[in-house]
Image 1 (cartoon, rainbow, N blue to C red):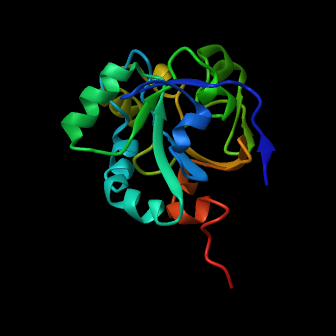
Image 2 (image 1 turned 45 degrees about the vertical axis):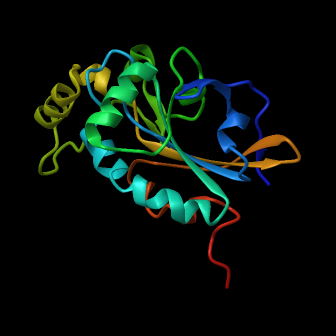
Image 3 (image 1 turned 90 degrees about the vertical axis):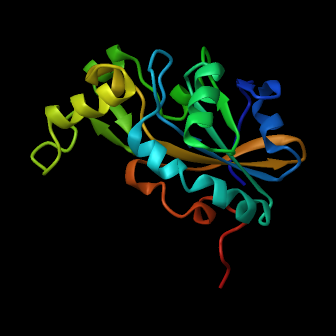
Length: 198
């Protein structure tokens, strides 16, 4: 069914403190969108924000497949709540600030890890070169995105987008799937029990 999760990940939610199993809210599966919003940022990532604009409409469809959708970021809950209100979003968003969740699921890195090269999107990145040589890429684009979040480029890339799926079986949580970068497409294809069957 997946890889068992033995670590007790803790989150801050609108309803208070929660463990990963609490995020299921009576459903058998959850999708977690690793939303780029660092602890000291002033705003969320513009690209993640564009993706999240579709979440309000997706929540009901996912619920019909026994799936709970969450966004998770390392920013403090108060910042997430303020940004969520500003954007007009209603989907649940949890803070993993101070925990290992985003790090363990390859969505956050320290500056030291970045300088040494990281494993992201299932391959090794020896040195960060965001869309180097591509139109709209390079250092100027990185700095512009970082500035929109109220941070610097080096800090901006300590957070990465991704999506992870988990299933709850007999009280145990299992990690079934993760995808990163451009792989965060159609939501129902990311959960094992809701994929269309032949």
